[in-house]
Image (cartoon, rainbow, N blue to C red):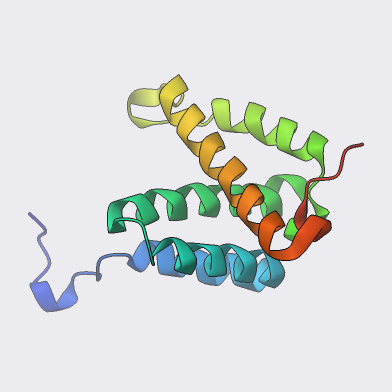
Length: 131
């Protein structure tokens, strides 16, 4: 239970909203494409599934901005995705261990589905280019 009175506690989702605001400031195109995709997921998936996709895409966007220096989804190349997979596998979780292989698979599945859907919507403009 929180020590803060209810009126002073952050609202659910505040962290995600704050993080999206930072991503949007650094990479507005990537944030717009990802958030549009998440809105579409919300029309047919359960809220917890959308939350999981939101978390995975925020993590991808953070990596794009901080590790790869990318600001647009269309700038991602195949070698960037390969680098992201390695980076993701090394991410910590509680207890100082790295994420589980199942978490890694789920996050990469979300990323793959994201690219599949936006390619359907826009054609090859957002397809990770091969080197």
